[in-house]
Image (cartoon, rainbow, N blue to C red; front, side, top):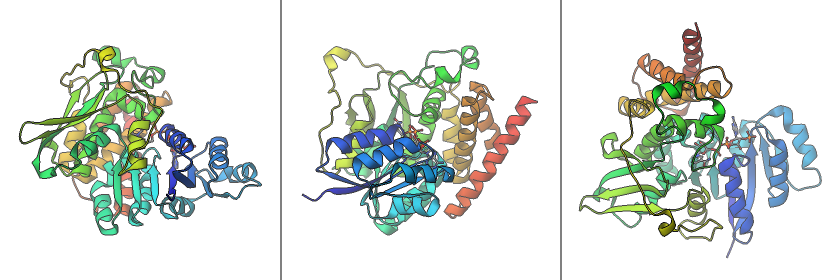
Length: 387
Ligand SMILES: NC(=O)c1ccc[n+]([C@@H]2O[C@H](COP(=O)([O-])OP(=O)(O)OC[C@H]3O[C@@H](n4cnc5c(N)ncnc54)[C@H](OP(=O)(O)O)[C@@H]3O)[C@@H](O)[C@H]2O)c1
């Protein structure tokens, strides 16, 4: 059997290293072509050496010399810049893991999609900001987009071999994050260290804060709309604190299919890596007798306004989704840097949406322009709330 050629965009992050872990356990199945990172030159070079990658791309150009030095004596080319990133995304690999965090991943994802690759999509912000354009580009190029976000991967699995026109509703489950039972007053004092400590999942800092505000579930609502083509009113959110059921599909006949598994990203990543087959993973199998009970509750939109803001942005049109995402990214970075409070994140998003007209970006250049403008607006709004 020939090995599947793979590239990993964002190879040094949480999803990237989980993907590498699975690939390195199955060297007979996968051949690594390209790996990329932003700044973590040591981890990037180390992974490139271990896997025999042919191309390593570092986003921070000042680190190129160090990357070259660390890769000396190997056949791996060290590069920087957007062309090299596009080469990593759309070059020789047939399968591409999109695991850059934030809208920074949009252009490489579009390069992979435009080149007709099989794209394992973790980078939800790319889909949130340019979902319509991305799905249309995939239709034209013949690219396959495999959802890696555990919820969307679960829905993808539950839809398999069923007719999507028979679906009545998608149910995205949510752990509720570390502050599920906190009151608003307690939330005002939340620190970055508390916000990144997720009760069930081990993830990068940005998505951990998004889970704490529940903006993550809001982004996933928009993501589900683009991936599965259902309107906002047919996608619901259900809090399920144990994170055992990763999402569900309800059918018109009253059947509901769910996908269950341990809270370990290697499960959905393995599904995408081996798709349309399956592969073994070292992930602990579920012991439902030990878990004992699964519980569910409605999300609280008053304590978690991000859910309503995301639904509002989805219903208002694609420009609003770009603004929601960009202002959230800026606000999360400011929160992690200790410059704003936890509750300010959603306050800023709400203010920015109120100042945005509903338009539909016609191209990726339009999306990038709206993203850039929204980050400037986020800066202005932060100065306003600090005054
Ligand atoms: N972690 C999870 O369990 C999980 C689950 C579902 C979905 N996702 C989604 O997957 C994506 C990645 O999440 P993560 O938790 O793995 O993030 P992460 O741990 O922060 O890793 C991000 C990766 O992207 C690289 N990167 C960051 N900024 C970049 C830029 N401007 N240009 C190029 N590369 C850049 C980082 O490089 P450096 O290491 O050099 O900074 C790193 O390799 C996010 O969109 C997230 O929402 C994650």
